[in-house]
Image (cartoon, rainbow, N blue to C red; front, side, top):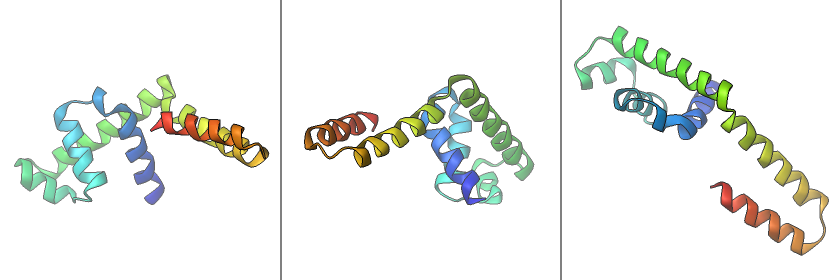
Length: 106
């Protein structure tokens, strides 16, 4: 469950602008703020099933965006390459360039 939560948080970071306000709100409350389905349903005055359905559809959409755009996957690959470059280099100038590249990712 923790792995799924971390993945959804990462995908949300990359693709939240492509979601509706309601989808963003539900996912943020559920994954970032750790609200239960019941708490979200009370907050929005809808059934738990409606919240559950919306969250599942939103998760599916995030996965589909990632499948097509690969933003998160490419980000992870770049992070891994930065790490390898840093470990492979003893040149302080190369390490400084890697650090600068990493800062552009944020």
